[in-house]
Image (cartoon, rainbow, N blue to C red; front, side):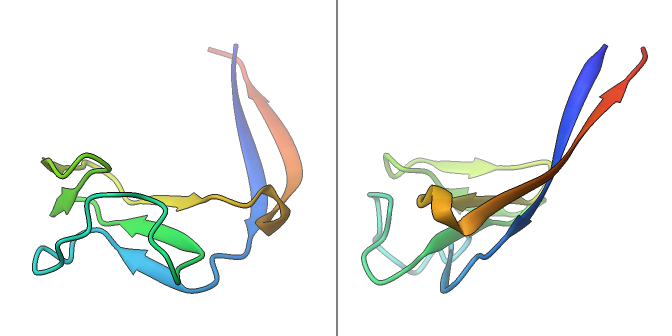
Length: 76
């Protein structure tokens, strides 16, 4: 079986890691509550490397921004 969480997440002020003009190489970025990494675009990772993601990824650093709603179980 496989599992998936469904959650309510407050992103707050988002840093977009596809902003290649930025020289940010360390996360979390001061002044931001979360990071949005865009799928099908080049993004900058935590160590400064460039990486293309297949899907969007949203990252929050404070667990108080997340409220788990459901745990879904799938039969495979």
